[in-house]
Amino acid sequence: MSQHITDAEILDLVDIPLMVEACREAFEMVGRGEILNPARSQRVEVRDGLDFFGLDMPAEWPGHYRSRKIIEEYSDVAAGQLARRVAYVQFEDLQSGVSLRLDAGVITDMRTGAAAAVGLSFLAGRAVERVAVLGTGRVARQVVLACDHLFHLTELRSTSRRATNRDAFVTQVGPSLKTQLTMTTSIEACVEGVDAVLMAVPTPEPIIDVDHLKGVDTVVVIAGDSRTRQVTQQVLCDCPVIVDQYEQALTSGEFRWAAEQDRLHEINLMRSPIGDVLSVADAACGRVPVSGGVVYLTGMAAQDLCAAVRVHERWNQKH
Image (cartoon, rainbow, N blue to C red; front, side, top):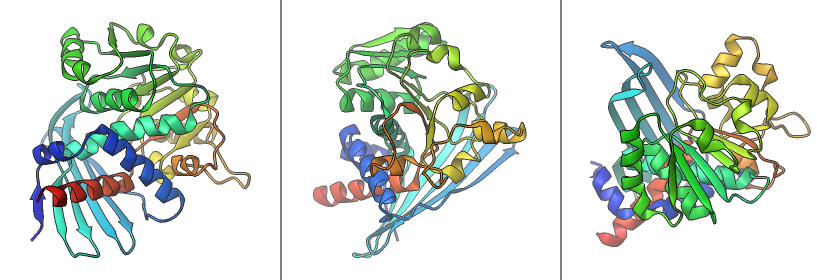
């Protein structure tokens, strides 16, 4: 039987610096072919009057570790509300035979935020000093913490439509930051004059277009949900785009919309000299020119695997 490690226990074992390290390692090892990261399988349907979203995400470091993350979410996408969620990582140490079942709420939120900051560091075409984070949810909190940790920031902004969300966000993350967090009342005020914009907003219609991004070097879109679109098609056409997993990107909202409109070919994907789509893992291994643009993230099972390894190691140290 697997040992069960809860979200509360995981939160006591890992932090954002450790997750940044895990995500960097995941990108690099996938880029070198040392971790297998096949495209995930996903289901989207309506159940009991709610939007159901299911994911199965396997990864393996051959001869060392194997993991599989399962996520089931019930939400009202139109209202931007999550009703309930089940998420866990089944983890195996192939050398010791140890099997763990890890709650995946903390792991997913933290590694998603960490991956956004790490992805930004790979592609940014200039020093990242002023950052805007759109959203005030669980993932946005981790994005803010990861950017504050990874970069020497002079300005850090965030925004939400609701004043209560803005106030709660400052209360939750402000005390943990080196950089003062400024909350704005509009997207326009949030993104004006920044070096990078990172987005974690589950919206069915785009909230960012090219006019918002004048002067912005790099945009990070935390995507992966076929039901949501955060940026317009023109953003993905005007800026070079690098994805974490191309097959997964094709099932994400912006790419699905482009395909339905017969405009997928317009997306300005970064490619190798022979035409292969380049990924963030390629960037981690130095195969992508540093240029700025759009980092389009759908979430990688390899990140869950590397995060789970660290939980496993810290758990062993304490027990």
